Image 1 (cartoon, one colour):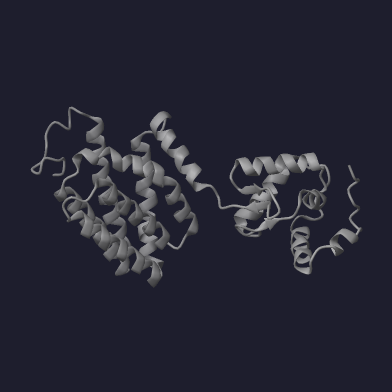
Image 2 (cartoon, rainbow, N blue to C red):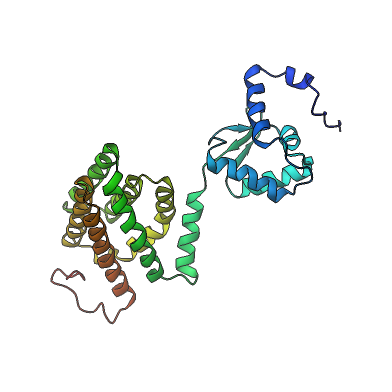
Length: 282
């Protein structure tokens, strides 16, 4: 094995094209000057923070292992262990071949969503815990959306809810189609808040949210769908009209009523009394 080149050696860099040299300088500035002997966890944390902060863009190619090790002042073994940690967490992808390399990836919110679903299904978290979180989270999202949603975000929200209302009032539409539009509305509402963290959290919640929606599928009637879609239409209208307190109150009412149906599903003795339409809507 060849000895690692000293920091001051330039011939290998001269063999690279100018754009690559500029890229190397970017990472040298980002990670250079680190104290030698840092562990793999510390190196992984610094790269993770750079990806999440945007200092390393999603899809950007990181330098080669040798160069990264030099920037951090760590051995090749330590650097490789740090990369394994990042790859396992989904923050980087290592591709092989001529066009390969180490690439930054989007934060794995889908894994978070799967973990939330598993926690609700098999862990100590209950549907009541999930509802409690959704209440405060979506009430704040709706209020923020009504205060600062862009015209584009409002237009997208109104388009989604229009499709939802149309589907909700059309007989014969599969439950899954209605459910996907319902979930899309809540996602668009979080996005309209203007806070990308809220949008990411809602995306992560979608797996657990889908489980919640599936639980009430046996209560699906055209009347029930229409009522649910009408509630969300009023939320969207409040956002469009810049009425934050109204948007907050309406989404709270919607979530609470949906939660009541879920609780009745989990309590058979309470679900014996159907409503006027054969469902549990009163």
